Length: 240
Image 1 (tube, rainbow, N blue to C red):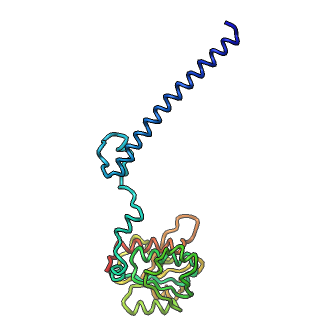
Image 2 (cartoon, rainbow, N blue to C red):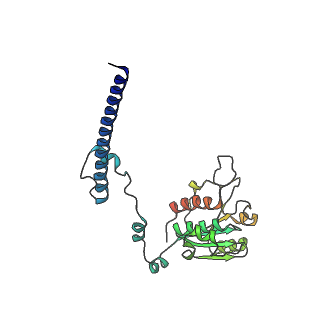
């Protein structure tokens, strides 16, 4: 057989092989897509276990389907009911925290944990500031809050009404957040990253909470620290 003809035959055979392989791959892909479509229909029809096979068992969420924003909204009470809802007996005091994003984030945390009151001391607050609005996501209108000119004065008044004073700061005798054990009304004081909590306030505190810093940084962002402490308080201090 001439060389040119031999090469041509090989090219034709190779092309036929690739075409056949493509058809097989397309067939597998079509079957797989059809199977996935059936799975998707099952997952969203509410009949999760109608087809008990290995593929569906692997695809089923182990912790339930993701709740949409509408699902979460349906679980909420209306505005009038919310305003009269009991809150957790916690007052959060911000000592000279001036960054609007941090203030907004702490509004959101106070809403999430149903904090009784937020006191923002040592600075002037403008609820319309863009970064505050972005971080708070509307919670600045739902959390009871006040401004105070002086942190020490605000803490003195809280202590006089029976609040246990907890300062979140790096001190030599602070306890870890997970070791918190409280029962009554609590006043939690948080300071800005660059400014320690006023020493007058530390001297009035009944307890210091110190978050371990195991890396190279010496402190956490104030909103991050607030999230950790409020979470642990929520585990030991019931609402109402």
